[in-house]
Image (cartoon, rainbow, N blue to C red; front, side):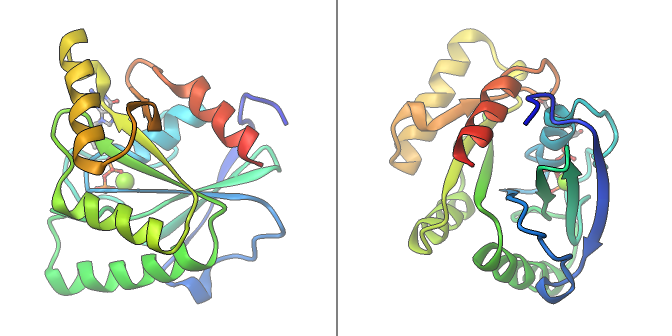
Length: 193
Ligand SMILES: Nc1nc2c(ncn2[C@@H]2O[C@H](COP(=O)(O)OP(=O)(O)OP(=O)(O)O)[C@@H](O)[C@H]2O)c(=O)[nH]1
Ligand SMILES: [Mg+2]
């Protein structure tokens, strides 16, 4: 398929696994990560489409399970963040339940995003352990690298690697702002198929 990941369009928002569209045999890539880590911006960067996925500085922007249909060859799936979304605990737990059901059933690969400016949190460790426990193929991404100086970028990689117990090369450094890592991620996804 074209490495351009185009054309792409928004397909549907599904509240539950049962209401997700049929996969039609297309591979699915799901974004997970804490609220505000940059999942929706990551999708826009991969698709080179500013504003296709709705982003916001207010955590908890993405609700439901959002499907993007890409080049008639694959789908990207934007998920609500875990962590500090500005919504009620009850609602967060409800999302979490639907998200877990979706993650167990469908994606071929999970892209787990972590904000490079902060060490991974307990909730990240839990998510990673959960994905590993269920043997879900996972690619780690360090987001917002443009916010860090070169030295801080290296430190961030080391800290993330230490906290999560993975080698540094398990993480793809990324910036939706600068386009850093876009080609590497696309390559990784295509070679996964
Ligand atoms: N500087 C910089 N800002 C970014 C980058 N990626 C995302 N942001 C900003 O971070 C904020 C959150 O981005 P979103 O893409 O909405 O984050 P999200 O993970 O989808 O958030 P939820 O849907 O609430 O879980 C927005 O203000 C983005 O503009 C990046 O690579 N660099
Ligand atoms: Mg979002």
